[in-house]
Every structure is written in structure tokens, then in C-alpha cells.
Amino acid sequence: MKLLVFVLNMHERLDALLTEFAHKGIGGATILESTGMAEVLQDHDEEDIPFLGSLRSLLNPEREKSDTIFLVLHEEKVSEAVQIFEQMVGNLNNKNTGIAFSLPVDFVKGIPNLE
Image (cartoon, rainbow, N blue to C red; front, side):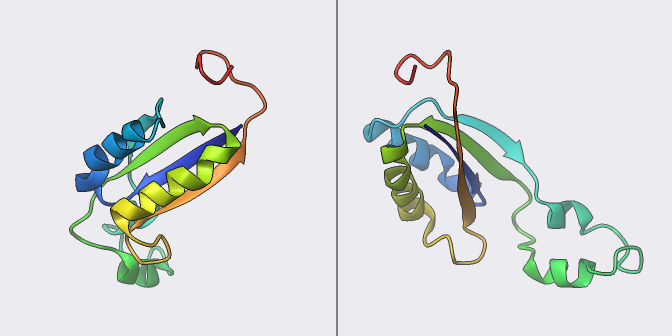
């Protein structure tokens, strides 16, 4: 089992992404609204935080919040979920699309299809 985490920078695509997951039999997502470090630091004085100038160049000022999506999946579903995610947002190597990572899960209880 894997915990698959997506940070979706394009909030407007959340509903379409979740609908596509459901159509492909990927369910049980938990979504949290999140904010990136650069967004939080943008209001600080650059003299207080020396690396802030480089972070500001990465900011998309129109995007304030992101969605962090957590999914516990069988390992064979991870690549399919990532493929769906990239269909919705574009290549994750592109700027301001999002990130994805997985972690091993050694215990699950409370998700009927995964126990």
C-alpha cells in the first residue's frame, strides 16, 4: 500500500480531478486546503529573510491556496492516479502545476476495500 499525496496548485481543477478519479475507481481521497511556504513569506521584508527574493520569483501572485490530496492506494494504482493528475494539470515538471509523492503504508483500518 501507498499513501499518495498531491499538492494541486490549480484549485479550479479539483472537482474535475476528483470526478476523474471516481470514474477510474480511485476513491477515498481526503482534501485539505494548504498554503506554500513562499506564499506565507511573501509579505515579509526581504532584509529579514535573505532568500525571499528568489522565492518571490517563483510565486504566482494569482494563486493563494492549494489543495493537498491524500489517497491510500494499492501500489499498482499509484501510476494510474499520477497519470490522471497530470492529465488534469499538465506535466508536473512544469512550474505551478503541483507535486506528487508517495510513502509506504504498513497499516490501514477503516477503508473497507484496502483492509
